[in-house]
Image 1 (cartoon, rainbow, N blue to C red):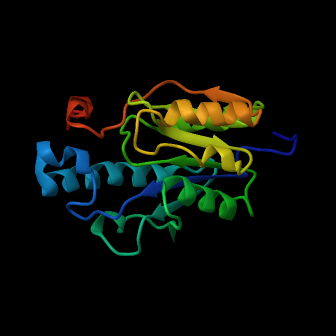
Image 2: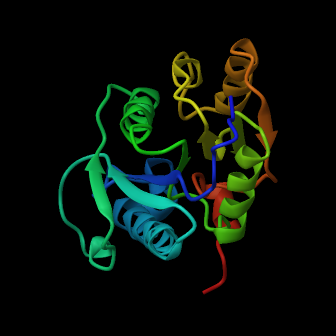
Length: 204
């Protein structure tokens, strides 16, 4: 539940990202772009997401990598970096949420796959929680989500979800309803995950 002491500044924006390694990132795009091409696209998208994270000053921010390591895309990011922990995405997000709620009233998760996600979209997410929602979701066109914001580390939102499928959004909404959480939905955006998504990339 949202309480009267919540203010947008006492929130944390967490970017979940994979360290760029050819063959292990953007795997669904490898048939179209090859392993190196898919990795280059991942680096480009990750760089844009890191730039947003670096510049967003409305709340606390941090980066959660799937593994420790170095890459040039990280060179211009000066924020806090953590390593994810857990057997699947839900477990890793829940672990991060539990860690971040020690010092924040709200936690927001974003990934690197949505180039249309911007500061205004983040502002709307913060405003939704401030207005009384327990959960705010930015739905993705592929049936997942591009943003998840929460006022409580509710385990139901992270367990029993078929991660990486078109069921993620519907299962998350079912979990929220089962936990009697008030949900606010943001406008739908597109992830760049599949060959048919490539035409959605911004023109350079």
